[in-house]
Length: 270
Length: 270
Image (cartoon, rainbow over all chains, first blue to last red; front, side, top):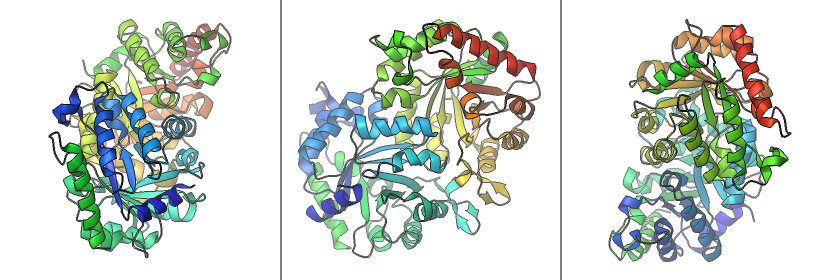
């Protein structure tokens, strides 16, 4: 099954466009999991159990595991999702970008070591650095386009030949890079007008949309400007708003409720 | 000591602009190290011992360790260099780029977990994604500018306001991003004309220059177009040309000879 197919199934099965970002910062975890041998995994496991009927994807952010020297917790999390929520696409958020021989190693990391269904990548270095990922026709390759952060316009808004840099990325995906029908784009919820422009360039492509919740993106505008013709096409990520819904022993229950609430809020605009 | 200072000392001490890229692919290792418990580290250790008098930096590429599930070998390599070649700057090549809270985790990975002296980063997402690295005034932050790979022009050569995208990156570093005097740029040896243009924009900045050796960059042009006024300013990386100089039991000895030879070739044009 391809990433597009798996995602479409998850959208339908859970009637949800919500993706949960599994970005656990040890310092912010509830006290009740801090003593576990693999605290990030213990935290994620409870969150996954509580949210898996309300989401269309999980997206662990590799930096949280690498930065805290807890790669094992990432592996355990990826394995747990594959076994216990096999219908939910697994996006490894790594934003890799490197020359071909190195990109092949990063593709091995994402698809063999962690058996992700999809990976995020950075387009700055050009096609040959994306090809080692795109060549995996059954895997999703989610390319940064217009990112959610405050200074994303520093380069992305530069205008060349009448189009901003992020529009060039969308056009390259449309015209040249999506030869295996497995590409997607990252577009921040914090830039709804840009989301609209990119939906015009790529009417059907899946978009990974971070930036609702802690970063302040407006859910209604995301749906109005970003949904495709059949009111899907979006993987709307929330991390902090779901995983830190409570810092008490009820953290998982509250995360489940927050995921359901975000799902229902999104669906109210579809 | 800052990254600039440590690099200047290494340039002088070893009279060398050579950086060795520690990118070991298990499949390509000499048979005599494949049986070691930590084969990538065993390989690197021998290479380091044989080259440390001829180089100005070491640059492990994180993908090779992450992709082969051998993070421990990376940690051992970083520790070994810190202890046995403390005068040689240690560049962790990761090309990270992510929103602020995530970038902070990646900065922890590079500077706390692996105690790198410098890290490579991707500018596509803009200033606030680089700031968590740049704020470490004693660490080097080496920003992708014009990369060495064949399709690097896909985005980097787009022209906005009369300047190509990679020139905008160099100008942003010159005008706004180098507030801690710790930034550097990646410019591929395979694009000598671009190297010349960027040296004009940033007359004194250190440049990390990959692409000599296996990728085909011309050493003479790199020096003529890329050296600063005092004939330094360059960290010229070779990976495959040095670490795979021999695949026999003499691999380390041959790597040492290859590093010395590249150093002397470079110096013949200075």
